[in-house]
Length: 93
Length: 511
Image (tube, rainbow over all chains, first blue to last red; front, side, top):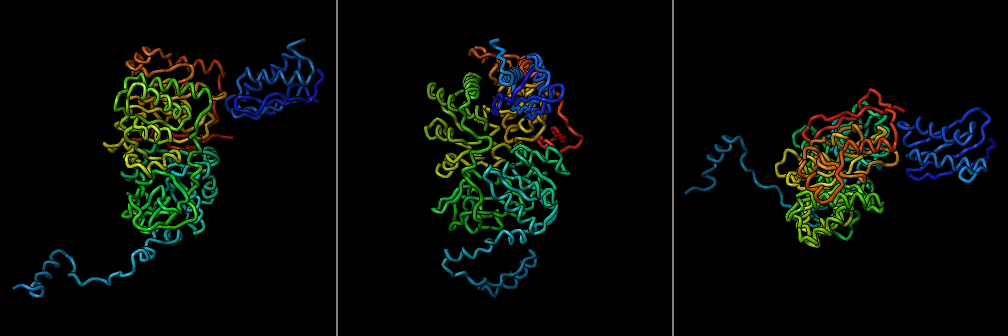
């Protein structure tokens, strides 16, 4: 799927800021900065990857700045960033 | 007839028997006008002179109080000076440390400070120590525990450096100043009083040198060896920084309302009750709701303890609280009140919360509201180490008040962001579950099974009583399973219980 650079989210406590960009490499590459990286780093990466795959995005570069967001928040922010990056509105189309 | 001369042989004989000298006549009288004379007080010296004359040597223990909280200037000033003078291997015994003490990192690296005891620490210093900066583990004590340790010799202080907002040249010192030149105010000097009474040498640093007698004084001249005038001992505007804040957070307000209901319906809300509230936003806010019920029901408190805040001062001035017992003034209003009101009593750490002192105020405390970083299913509480394994708090009076109060109430949200606050086992044990009675969360109130009568009373009042295990499960269901923290093998902190026993250790965190 064709991607533009896009972002969603904030740097507020309990939120996650997702920046998405096209990638030349295969797969989803995630650069994660998180206040809960020790305990939830792998879980956060898993949720991001699964959310993107669910939207049909297999290759992307993600920069995620997490301030302790819950999984539901992460899915929402990743989805919003993906919609902005692809121009494909998953809620309408 | 017997004259002095006649009696001289007997005087000499008596003196010899008592191993004393015979009186040889007085030295010259000081006939200078005494306002001028006091300016020549032999106690009045520079910081460097005070350090030299105190006999401080490498390896000795120096102590500090934290009444200026984030605004403290004394620790950094004195340790900088000690480093300049070439001291090494000193033990730093602080009543607590704050973000502002970050420069200690360099002094630890340079070997000036090699050991620390404190109630807590925050910021970059805490971060570095959590990651293994020091060879010796930091000793963490509660405020009451520190008071006991100073008195019983576990924590021997060689030289105490005490910042005071006013002092005369003889060392009568206060946490406020009655003069027009007042530069700072911190209110109670409660945590410094055991240091003053027990240290081998006591240095008062003040930014307002006032005329003798600066009485009534928090610290009496009889304990003081040196008085040093400095530009500033602390920034009073930062007293209310750190943990103290007036909350507008709707969740904190919800928690505060629930905590107030536990207070009102727990069985101890009777005329003459005593209470302490901790420094968390919710426990401070709870005071407002308790006040309303006191007025409604015509109930008055005999004393409020702490950690005195503007809210408590207001109720005291309204006559709802008979007396304030203040080991630490949490804001400027409280600090001014201790200056102006005789019934607002300054208490030393020992009078406040020592387990060894029968008359300590916590022994007669009915209720306390405290906050927590984490609580676990066995009602154990952690207020010191974050869920990321990094030190970010202080024991404070938590252990002391929770153990002594007839009803101890912990207020904490179920989650802070993705950090669960109700867990299977706390990261570090600070206050044992045997001291904790009630835990208030926004998802319900858990009562320690040791206190079925409290659970009954709260149920009757219509409060939502839940099983603590269900709260832990609920937290886990929202946040998922956490990976274990990457703790190393090095002990970076030792948590003392208030009775002087070792409660837990803190391991270094890697990364």
